Each structure stands twice: as structure tokens, then as C-alpha cells.
Image 1: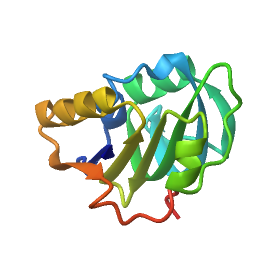
Image 2: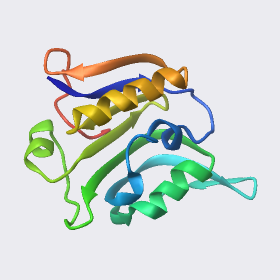
Image 3: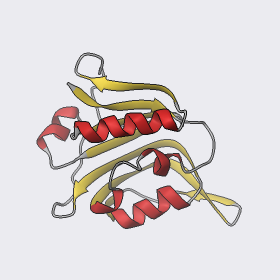
Image 4: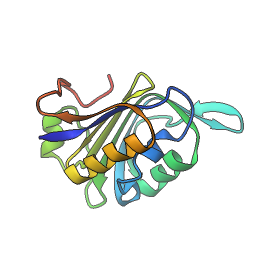
Length: 154
């Protein structure tokens, strides 16, 4: 069974998440944001992308950030919940499966992205999108090859 997609993005500033998540309706969800370590460029200066963890960010706000700003990701944790539900903390794949969370995105060491998605069609579209963007090491995360024990970046 397909759990999601893993991909390697360029280790530089850009809007890579916005491009990669085009097939997913980011604005249609509320997001739990882990304020890990990511930076955006504002007036030529670096500042934290998120100053602290955000328990509930409107998807339209997040969509604007990831599509229209330039940022450098080191570690980041984003989780999508239906607008009708309050985002909760998700620590394991089991938590993910039993929650209302639809998508979990983890960035580790600036380049390595793991996207867990309950909708296999969306996972296929993200996989195809990553190929079109010429990202590297694109593969499906499956029951057989997923050795991750936590859905967190730390």
C-alpha cells in the first residue's frame, strides 16, 4: 500500500514546497505547523519562516507563503486537517491513520522531503509533479519500505 512520496529537493532558497504541493488543495485545509528551522528572505534579510509552532494556520495563508515567498528549509513539519477539525499533534504513522489529518509533510536536512497522504490519487499526482520538476530520488513510500517510526522531524 502506498503511504506517500519521498523526494529530494534542491538545497537552496526557493519556493519548492509550493511547486511540489500544486496537486494538493493547500488552501482548503487548516495546518498544524511545527516551527522547526526554516527561514524566509524579507527585504534581503533572513528571518524565521515560523516564529513558533502554529496550532492552526489557515490554508490560504500557508499557500501564499509556500508559493509566493522564497525560503530555505532545514527542518519543517506541516500537517493538513479539514477546516471542520482542529489540528492535533501527530507523532506516528498510526496517529496519522486514526486522525483526520490528510497530509503530513516533513523536511529533514534541507533536502529530504517525506509526504504522507491518505489519498493515493494525490500521492500519485505529487509523484508525477516531482518528476516534472526534475527533483531527485523520487519514490513512493510504501508499507514495505517505510522504516520511519515517527512522523516528526526530530
